[in-house]
Image (cartoon, rainbow, N blue to C red; front, side, top):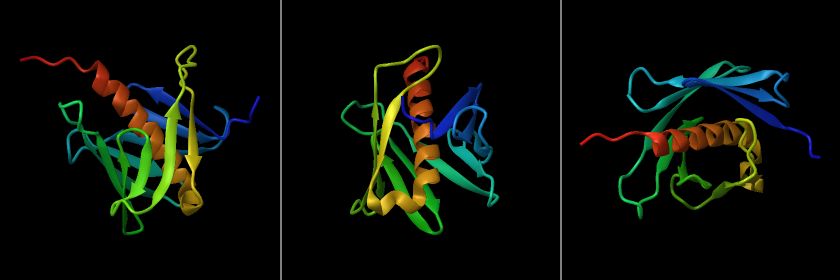
Length: 145
């Protein structure tokens, strides 16, 4: 069995991310953005700062969901739920592949971080947790017409 590098707890609309397993040190928490409905604020600890995530969900199946954020003035986005790239689309930083092995409220997947993404590892992992959770919420949303 492989070591757990990150662990994500889900409580209603808040995520808490730990380094290591569930008893590990907190590195970030997320809350719904109060300024922009549907977006998410990620509060990182050490150093203490916030990253705002903008979510764009499309009703048409052929259009990919896009999740955007900025770190140190550089813009990034998740293409759909599986690829993190620089906003110009030139640099692939990470890929996420979900697995069908889920147990008691736990999701399992694999994040592969490219050499170009190594310095952004915490941002990549935390934003991927948010993207996956938002994708689940979007699938479960009830639409009234």
